[in-house]
Image 1: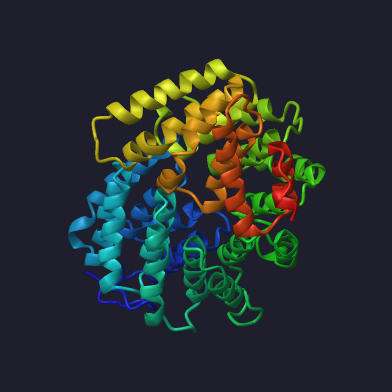
Image 2 (image 1 turned 90 degrees about the vertical axis):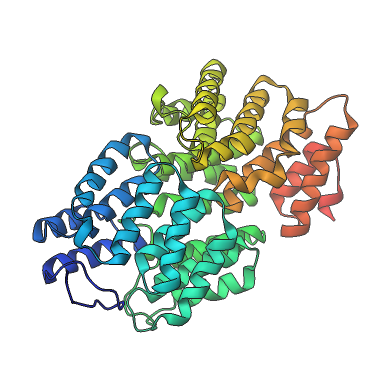
Length: 458
């Protein structure tokens, strides 16, 4: 076992300086989203084939993309790692254990392993990054905030990865509705010159979220433009931040600008992964709720989704966005079939400890039923299904901004119901909540018009 201690006070599982350099570069890529880390990890494996961490990191990265088609490659990498486990340091074996749990779909248990590791090794940046990512996928706002908050006091601000950990903290603050604190932390992480030439898209993202949740659409769009050099080129996170710009435009009812952004940034070859297609589907659906005609964009988007029957029910958040695309494209029969396969996979899987079981049962499956009902024009069913779902929505994973598609669908459906004052009132109640949180933006006023009320215009 190596006796070398790295810059984060962790014992390395290798004596190879070259392998360690490749792993450090891969870790930076994971936290900054600049290119994938796979080439760096392959180089680390070549430099030291006996080091456990590189194949574990490769498996974890592949799994983090939430693509069921990549699971076999992740499993192969973990098989390589298994043969190297015996001589590895304890913290690297913990990463292997957590990543195995992720592979098995036991995301809650994986985060518990990382949490325990961080209590002992708060400067383990990989544990912070991965635990935060799967907290996000699980909708665990508590740990999104608390875990980096516990770790930050142990970090030296001169550490090159410090602003990236600060960005994790900023996003956790935002997801706990602490918007001023989130904005302060995010701005600090992106402060020019404070961290050399560090580019921190996750911090830009955290501030954008804080502004979105307050209805500050003009300030949000300005913020993204000011920091565009830090995220727009060569960055795997760029499509998500273009999505945020789309949300700011939509809040101002600039639907023409949103469609232009979809065409230029969120369509065709720009969409390389499912996570990017989710954003495109979410933005098009929000336009659809407003009655904006999007033409063939739905069908073009749907062609890129992985809809292999065996992959249905892997992750409810992704499954629901696939249904958005199917319903938007008018393919309700396909949406019904996908829902049935998701239900079969999610509820009859041989491992009931999979995190997706509860996600699908509590939120994903009823949400998909409501989306299909919207496509059929059964707006009363949409309202009665989604209204009681709202307190459970966080279990679906993702962010508050992403899950708002549930509230917006409910409001839009309530504006279309006939013969039910109660269902109409449910939509008005949800809109009132929105206005109290974000002030009366043009988007909220438009929904008020659909509901036939002028209260949001006050």
